[in-house]
Amino acid sequence: MTMKFEFERPHTGARPPRALRVWCGLWAAAIGLGSHSAAAQAVPSSPQPFAVQAAPSGFAQPAPVSARRSGTEITVLYSAAAVYGVGMGVWLGAEAKIKDPGLFLIAPAVLGVGAPLGVYLLDNPSLPRGMPAAIATGMVIGAGEGIGISSYQFVSATSADAWGFRGLSRATAIGATLGGVGGFALGYLQEPSPKSSLLTTSGVLWGGAVGAMFGYGASGKGLGYGRANDSAALGGLIGFNVGLAAAAGLSTVYIPSYRALSYMWIGAGVGAAVSLPVYLAYAGKDSPPAKRGLVFSGTATTVGIVAGALIAGAGSDSADSESTSHFAHLDYVIPMPTAHGAELSIGGRLE
Image 1 (spheres, one colour):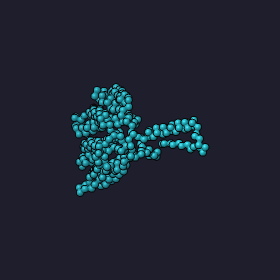
Image 2 (cartoon, helix red, strand yellow):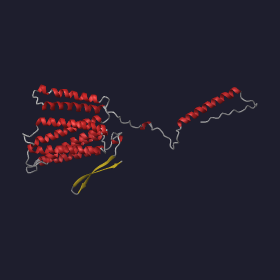
Image 3 (cartoon, helix red, strand yellow):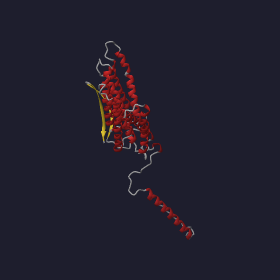
Image 4 (tube, one colour):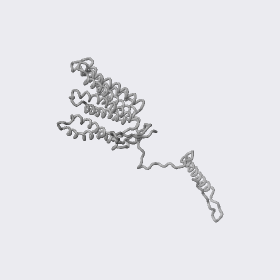
């Protein structure tokens, strides 16, 4: 800004007093210097083609995602660690063949407190975001694998070859330990979102339940529960791992919102409930065995999960708000009829 001061001579021809002229000149110079300094600070060193304007207060940008774990996330890990410690104590008691109940409960009590204490030490300073959820998910998945393998071995083997309770506790303890270590490594290397860990945990639970439905429903017509549960255990174990693979693969291109996860659980429950009337169709004397209805229940449950995800859509806490980078995005999942049944069409884009 430039300010120009001019003094008109009086009609008498006399000039203004010298003191007034000096004072006005100094005042004008000071204002001009301040104006040039403010302009120099306001104008960037390089020319800008467009002026940058601040966003209106009603459209504030969302707060950045914290790089540290949340209180809910570490609470989940504390809970998983407590259960893990109790399980490890039970395994030690089974391996030691302790029969006295008081002595047997010492190890579970000590380790049930010691494992959360280890989490406290690990979380000091606070763990990065996603790490506690990855560790807890790894322990749950590993324990589930151990339970599934030992359960199938128990129902399919003879009484003399069955692992029994000791084998069950051993497989569960080993699986949970390996899963926790794997979860820690995944959290350290990949920094997954807690939502991805929750999706993976949900996926193995859905897969195990649906697989058990298919396994039991597809067992032979004349087989009773004692033999049909072999197929249910095998189907549950297969479904558990299919759910794990599907959820882990989907997590690489899609991070669900908490709203979508809740809708998927609701969809699973609604699908299972809607399928219940089908068992009325097996009331006839010459009808197929009622367990065949479990095949439809498994299908309805799966459809409900997919429908819940589609109804929920993308929310404000979905993959778009995550700070981590993604190499691909899932755009749609559409069921399509074919000549021999149906198929799912999944589409997206690579970046």
